[in-house]
Amino acid sequence: MSVRIILIEALYSIYVLLQILVYPLLVVFAIVEVLKRWFRRLGCSRMPSLCGEVALITGSGRGLGRETAIALAKLGCHLAIVDIQEHLANDTAQFIAENYEVNTRAYKVDVRDYQQLLDLRERVTNDLGDVTILVNNAAIITMSSIDDPPVHEIQRMININFTAPVLTTKVFLPKMRELNRGYVVNISSLASMYPHHTFNVYGASKAAVRHLTSALRTELLEAKSAVKAITICPSFLTTNRRVNDVVKALKLNRILADLDGEVVAQYIVEAILRGETEITVPHCFIWLRRIVATLPAAATERLMAFIGGLVDPKCRENELAQALRTDDGVPFDS
Image (cartoon, rainbow, N blue to C red; front, side, top):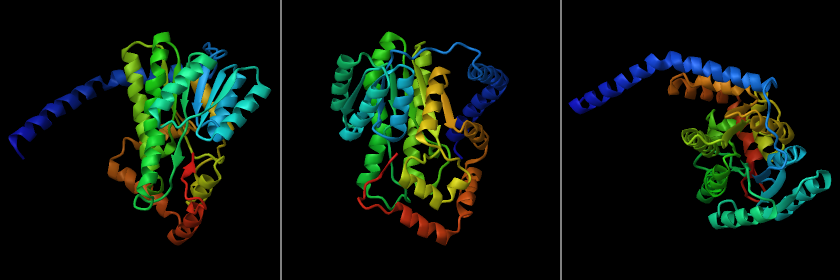
């Protein structure tokens, strides 16, 4: 080992020791934060009103996005329904307009296209007002080992799942910062916390979303901004038939509760109202994640491999192949 490496290791060892010394203070701070969150969850603190706010939700033509739009409409939010499939966006907007006394508009947009997002901002501002709630929900999922999906599918998944939230945040956050209020809600996934070979690229894209949102929170805190950035990490939803088939093929339904879009939408709304920073659905998984995070990487990976090995390989191979088979060759909408 060279002298330079020894000096580098010694310097950073001192840094680690300093962190250990201040750790008790961090524990106290963490306890205070947990108590504050439970205080809010018990309804002991006044929650903000969302009535009159303008919410823009990507991928809200169906599934979780649609249910989130409906949940926010119930609270009096005006809705910008954004989806690549225009007929689905129109259907959601029409349903909300017929059932709730809020303004709503449907917009066909490819969230990967920065120019389309700039145009969207102008249209929504003219139609509904300034966006103060941004929900980055649009996502797709390709389930397979890393050597199976075509390269264009991998790139498409990364662009929709991660690049798009970066672009939408870049477009809509500046106005929120100017108003000094608003919410950026990014939908991640439990797959970002618990790696599995079937969800490798998808999980990585959602982990990037978690990191992005965490970094945004630190930036907003540093700027003393009242804008909130929230990460939602739900389990797999039963609203997507194909994803549900894969979850059953992998026997993950034995350890994961059935969740539909309506239930997760309620978690999202409560996270906004209670000022949460990051939640899992169900909540208990975030505590499990924190425990697992203290383990060495090798131990965590062996644990996930062990869980995967509980499924009979031949059964898993046959059922998974059937579940992954599609007639159109298009990745699953999340």
